[in-house]
Image (tube, rainbow over the protein chains, first blue to last red):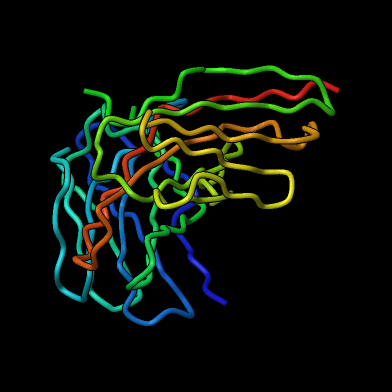
Length: 112
Length: 116
């Protein structure tokens, strides 16, 4: 069975500080991977997607970047956090040929 | 322009009643419609999904009714339980193809409260 793990579970960071969030998928080879952002009480907004190692496409510009260093790993980062980066970050995966996206447990980020 | 619209921000029903959550969409190219259930502090979990070639999909207490001509769909939760209290998101994607992008557009969500 596939498992999706996100780290850290939660972060409190200062404005202007760097950030790195991670996502790992186990039990699935070459998945499509996605990053989403969700404001508190809000909808989900797709940020990035990746279909293979080393290849990442941006969907929305939010002063964030993403990388896929390994087949099962997806990283979201920024060098300088803004207050508007606060929220819930979700990683999702999809199998080729399947429209369904499956979400991880999320990382809660508070920027002060 | 909101591509996927959920008509109610919140809905309260009594335990045992049928909860009906409505959703409409703008893009005729959408052909896949999943509903996700999200509890506070957790990631969304797929509840049930339908393709535009069908007008109904049932899974236990959950049923999707789909109207392609009217571009709307609804999620019916039969015999609602307090444990069903959560936020429900209607989403849409399409046309289906394997480019990897598979943009999933979400509605704003409906918060369902089931009172015992």
